[in-house]
Amino acid sequence: MAVRQGKILVIDDNEDILFTLKMLLRPLAESVTTSTNPKEINRLVSTTKYNVILLDMNFTADAVSGKEGFYWLERIREISPETVVILITAYSDTEKAVRAIKAGATDFIPKPWQNEKMLATISSALELSLRRGEVQTLKEQKSVLTTAEPKVEVIGESPVMEQIFRTLDKLKHADANILLQGENGTGKDLIAYTLHQQSPRNQEAFVAIDLGSIPHNLFESELFGYEKGAFTDAGKSKSGRFEIASGGTLFLNEIGNLPLMLQSKLLTVIEQQKINRLGSTKETPIDVRLICATNTDLHAAVNDGNFRQDLLYRINTIELFIPPLRERGNDVSLLADHFLKRYSLKYKKEIDGFSREARQLLKQYHWPGNVRELQHVIERAVILSDQKKLQYDDFMLRTPVASYREKEEKFNLEELEKNTIQEALLHCSGNLTQAADLLGITRTSLYRRLEKYGL
Ligand SMILES: Nc1ncnc2c1ncn2[C@@H]1O[C@H](COP(=O)(O)OP(=O)(O)OP(=O)(O)O)[C@@H](O)[C@H]1O
Image: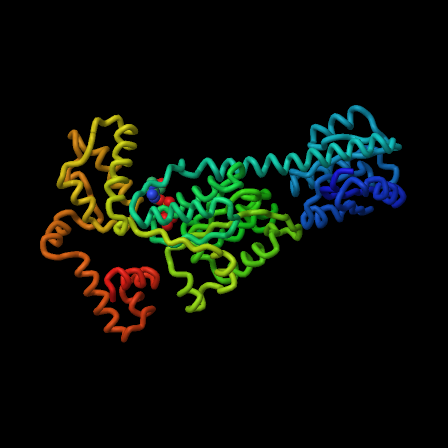
């Protein structure tokens, strides 16, 4: 026999009927709950997700109109529209059957029933309900996936990027949880997608959620989903990202933003591989590969008591540091050419390169917004330019071009950075965490710079 799935609720005022149906239907489902009192329906349906409800049409003795059945059918449709409802009555007639179906029932069974007919009807009702759930998940998957940006190949030839490509290659068959660290716009999302694409999970969904851009009060419902009525605005049930990503990869961007209370919930989910939607006691098994990303130093956050150490150890089986663009040498030029080609095509402009001065500026600029900033700068320049080559003045960089030019003439940026770090270290008596704070960078970034300048 197939694996028993789904929950059945039977409501009938006759105890014998309930007993017989319980015995008959038990082999079909995970559970069969019975009740003689229709007033229990509100409570039962609000607290448990039933797949199929078998509902008597007449509860009061002598009543034959079926009015009660229709009343309760409507209540069930309001509370749990996805549940399949089958009506039963001793006083069947075609007119009632048609009305019941119009009112949202799926089928109608006359009493006395034949066991084979009852079993066949309830089996198909269970099947229908489970398929409805799958369709709902697919719809939600589609809405999550179609909002994502189209993904492209990761471009880079610099030694630091070559090192990343070698590591990505080694991770092809490892289903390990991965933590990507790097400044905003360095390509963490793109690398997470690449990891998914090259993994055995690539036929399943890649679902991303940016915990830096959604309000804190929505974290829980977005991650774990909710049942209808779980909170004031929960008009209907919704799957969370964990459920939608099940079988595939879940990318949690800006994981450092997760409040401590949800960190412990996330830890439990990772350990038990099950989730509970908000407002539900039902556990749903999930199977996701987790890739997390952060632009903050989670190790420092652990030291400061803002991030759980046990959670960090669960998500960072492999840690990958994605370097800022300014440390990738000629990759800036490579990426600039790539974006120029893409946007010239998109905006139908005949621009075939950069002036020498413009290319020099791209190389020297420090790109605080990394690849994303470069991409936007080139797109804007392509839209506004009316020459064959992009010029120095076509770029509207975050640091104003004029003052940047002046600074370039006056200072050597690296020298400046090195001196500033030395000063900060002196000021903080060598305390790296304090120095990093003072400089407004992460401890990891500070370490890298100390290495770079041999400090
Ligand atoms: N090496 C690369 N090659 C091609 N495109 C890249 C590369 N790195 C980043 N991009 C592009 O730059 C943009 C920003 O990258 P992405 O969103 O992956 O960065 P991120 O580190 O996840 O940013 P954030 O931390 O702000 O979420 C995207 O459009 C991405 O496609």
